[in-house]
Image (cartoon, rainbow, N blue to C red; front, side, top):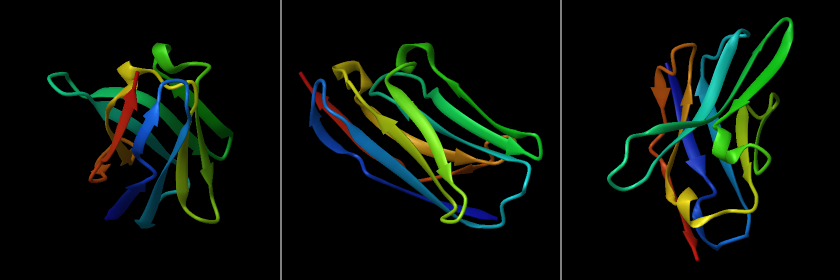
Length: 117
């Protein structure tokens, strides 16, 4: 089992920045992936960014609309994944969820991000 706790959400003006954190506890494999998803009111949950790692190295992927603005990273020692969000837009407003596992089997409770225009 893996437990995920997100933090860092809040209210920010358009053009501003936020950093989300996702602290994982429990068992994580050396071959693993974690990601961020979001769900805006009345919309489907969508993938935002993912990071995966194994003995060959680390790779990242992003939703097209956040490329160049968002950066996903991880701190091994803290078992934490971050989502740095810059140049925020009103359309980034959503509840952001952290997920983990090869099939994104584990989910956090979500953190609200609101971008005011």
